[in-house]
Image (cartoon, rainbow, N blue to C red; front, side, top):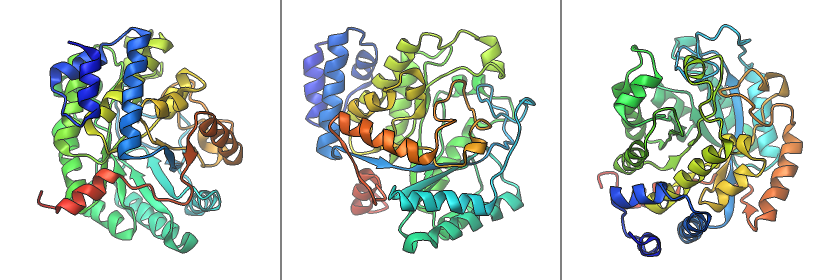
Length: 368
């Protein structure tokens, strides 16, 4: 295969087959990687633009009913000091987002579905919608729920939902989760989100122990088959208080390799899906101080700065060495502005930043 021909075809809008996707994901030479990132950035400019969409991240609670083998806040980790923000604290954080003109917030938490929690989130969404004349967009990242719960939260005012699959390969998914965690239920939840009316997001971890290029190609095909609107994915970073961390303590220890894998996956996703929103995640920043900016230059267009209370940050460690746990929201905003400007991009203040893919699909009609 010839790299320049594959990239030219992708930039021209041609759908890439699995063989070409695998070829791009296995690139290693610095010059080849730069060509890949340039092509992905060119596609981003064509289908999106050079503006970064911000989502003020509020980590509402680290209480979780799941026991995923890779996650630091898994229910079985007794070393975690559990917390749940009060409604007043959540609204105060959202007010900061409005004052900073971030345009949108994300409510993220461990997975729960008990009635009190469902009511609490519904109330939080309704209270946030009262701020700033209802101009704040709301994304939820709260795990698997029933169709009724998804609808209640949607009707309250949420309009985007991120539910990461972590791996679209059922066998690899099973190795990452206890037996009572269902791959089929995860996929069904994604379909329910679409049915309810949300802009639907998903994503995977990159560089997992035992993960292959074929797995990542399957992930890309999975994203396309579900016709998703947004992608949130990042490199796997170990947490040693987890079963996966204890089994593979050195997994992901090559920060350069993990970063490269994460950037390649962003770039190839941009070439493959073109007009979706793609997040440049904090995990990239954990591997390199400029990791999020590199993600933007590889094709991402969304960043989620943390605006929650500093008192809770160190209790929400999905992985180790997470950046920003001691940085207040104002300082983070100033640093982010400078970093984005330094790479020649700008921040789309005051915008929801909805996925162009969602708008295009809505224009085609729900049945298409």
